[in-house]
Image (cartoon, rainbow, N blue to C red; front, side, top):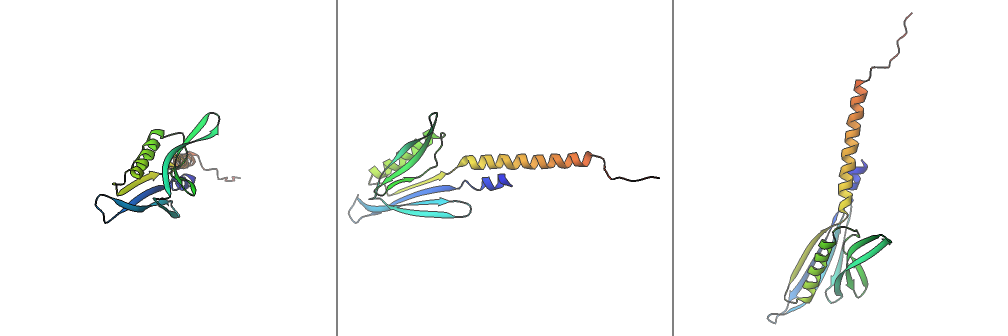
Length: 157
């Protein structure tokens, strides 16, 4: 059961940014980015005005002296907004995400940006592994029980 629960923890996040086309040719006016995080039991949505969004950066988070985690963070007037989970894996992919966001912000001609990001992919993999191991152990225990002779006591005089 623990494995099944962990499989549902992961979820994903979408970042969708739109610029509104202005009446003047070849220009765009300000727009908005919508950050939505989907989880099995709840989802949250946050809107960020493009005028408030400075850039995206790849942050290095040091948990221990030998462990560095990487996280894509949006820099806004109000502070930092984490976009991905922090992990030592997928650094190249997170760098690409950061560059995609910054290219959109620096290119006024682009009207739309849409990214779908998985969160905590380890939870799904680990949860699946636990579910398989638990099911296998249960089936193995059932087979062992079926092979054991009955321990019922009968008394003879």
